[in-house]
Image (cartoon, rainbow, N blue to C red):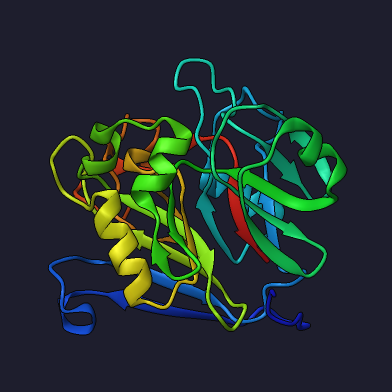
Length: 256
């Protein structure tokens, strides 16, 4: 069950490092204590097929906390997998990918077909790639087989982003810093282990690498991998190497 709703969103932010994890890593854990009515999955203005930076979509919607969300075609910007935003169906496919959703007052994760997407009554729905933790147990290998995900995808070291929930019904966002193409970050086995360590009951891998963006109170918290162009400097990532900017993506997770 999802945590109870409240008039004002309650977010607990923990900066992760070797001191509090015992691991050689840095990142962020966001715990939304009362996610009901505060959690939304949003497409960019213009819908699937349009790529927009997370911060642009987030600030237009008034998100206190936002991250990138689903995977997309890097050439066309098309969303990959199912997407439902505030009860509105944006994209429906029969692609076999793990889905995170909100139905009534509950979080759900699983594999759904086109009929289930349109008839189940999802408030929010987004597809990831690889169910990291299922009911408190590492599920990477089983999920990878179901989704026909290659081993190279699983063991690639990169910046990572996962969402899920704990036994209290709190919504969790886990981000691990890194640099794409420079072998800095985590693989999906490590993400699953860290998710379990941090109390995830279920954890779903979202788009990682240079797509990862965590925007909280108007500040990008994570390191970024993409180089800025002269016109992009307003999208620079303060925590990343000089001259790196957030990437344009499609859907986002929005907490408001």
